[in-house]
Length: 71
Image (cartoon, rainbow, N blue to C red; front, side, top):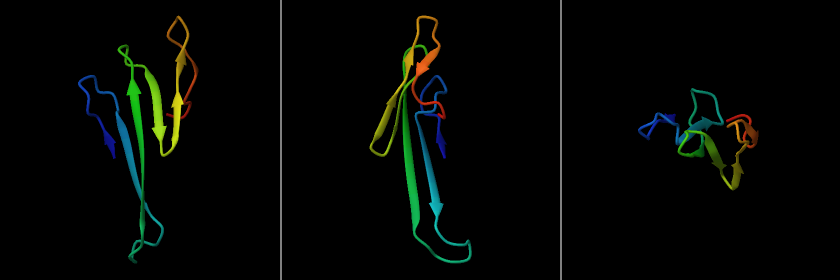
């Protein structure tokens, strides 16, 4: 589930839930959460998932030079 919680329509988080069994049986579920932080220009600057935080770096033209590539 995507959350669009800020006034600029940025995605501050993503929560995904999955089951480890077929649909017709009860099973344990796993929930993953990823949080995102943006700067004042609406550029992604930090993505955090579990114990891992990835920071994005931008050049003077606003192009991302390092950081999360799949976010």
